[in-house]
Structure formats: structure tokens, C-alpha cells
Length: 163
Image (cartoon, rainbow, N blue to C red):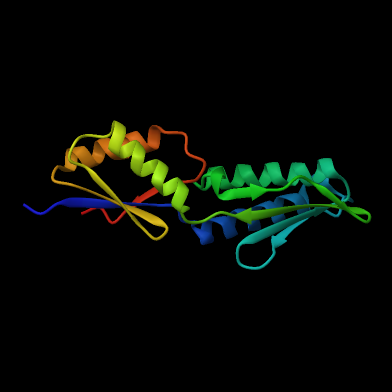
């Protein structure tokens, strides 16, 4: 029998992030506590978002609204890399970078976790910015998925290509 496998990846569902951003922009345009603060949220290129407001606490409040919208849309907050609010003239800005892909160090940590705590006979192989996990038993693969989900990693994980 052939080996069963799946991939561990860290991808961003860009459409869901865009929808959450649109909902946040609509909400801050209509909410009373954001009136007159000049609060906006917008894309800055492909992998970054910028929040602008008249005060640091208002910019932080916009970030909280955005995070709430992401959670409702099933996205992990681990994809966000938000900086502290910084003053820029009369405005306060927060730059948010979106994190996608698994770094080599993180992939090595997950591979070591699977080797040390996972079922015997399960192999983890680093392939670029993802991790391929193979085993003869599908039950072992499901145990590995539960193990990785239960671990508090500093990046979002998804499981794809299950065969």
C-alpha cells in the first residue's frame, strides 16, 4: 500500500482578509465613536495594511475591530504582524504586515516535534515554505494533525493535500 501524506502550510486567504478589511472600513465610517477621528484602514501593497487615525487609542481601536472581523471570518490572528502606533504629524499610524509561509527554522521545529512526540513511522520533510508529512497509516497522520493543532506555534497552520 502507498504512503498517505498531507502538507502543513501557512497561507493567507486573501479574499477573507479583504472582506474583513472592507467590513472594518464600513464599520468605522458609521460608528459614533469614530466620527471626526479621521480613522481609515487600507491596503498598502500586496502584503501590508495601514491604519490611520487622529490618536493612538483610536488607531488601536480600529485594529481591535479588524481583528474581531478576522476571527469571525475564520482567520488566525497569527497572520498579522502589527507594529506599535507611531505618530506621523497630526496622525497616528499602525503598519500591519501579513505573514505567509513557514520559515525554515519553524519548519525544523515542527519536524522535530513530529519526530519526538508523534507516532513512530511518520516522516516529516521540508519542501520550501511547507512541510510534507508521510506515513503508512492514516490514523498516524490524524494523530500528527491533532499534535500540531494542540501546539502553540507562532504562525497559522493549515493542512492541505491530504491523500
